[in-house]
Length: 239
Picture 1 (tube, rainbow, N blue to C red):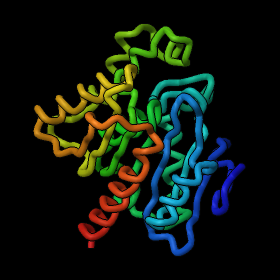
Picture 2: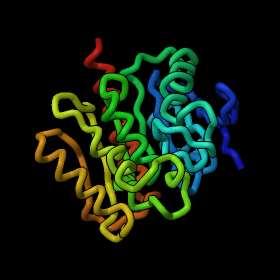
Picture 3: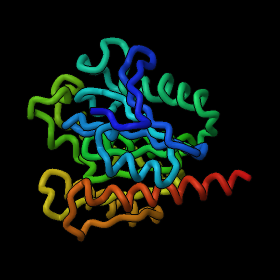
Picture 4: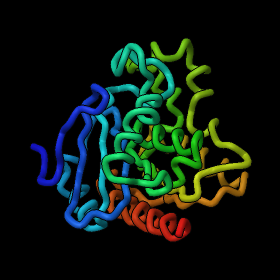
């Protein structure tokens, strides 16, 4: 059941959950869901954190699309998930809440976590703030397991070349990067560790915790605190 403050609407023909807290600041969190297709619209903790930090939120319903710039029949026959986010969802949100690009943060869990990071690494000027919980950064590990990845990419190697890690620009990156992954997460841990290693080697500032065993739910509060602080920082920088 959808919680108070949330609405489910259609944006460019796609189902989207939106949240307007009382006395909202001109900040937005774009939440990309995981393979479990969860929505913060039914999560009391997530909703309480949005209300506490006075953040708008928009959560598109994408199916098992991996939020990639590849056609996925489960999402749309003619538009890529990334193209939809860039060309339709984000412009709608900017117009709806009069948002500057730097006042938008992108975040997600698992499939959504890697989607958020890949988007920020590819377009750091548009998405200077990105966060991930248990991001599926080695998404090629899901190739051959019956997800749409099997038809989106011709083989496992082509899938690997489109991972978030391989989209990091050595000269330009998001200003605020945050990601965590429990060391007990067998599917996602190595990819998170690999991302940490690469960012460290490149001298890219980032905040991460790969040592603390925690569920995604337990990581929500620190993630939202990071996003809120980063959004305030970016707003002050633009004054």
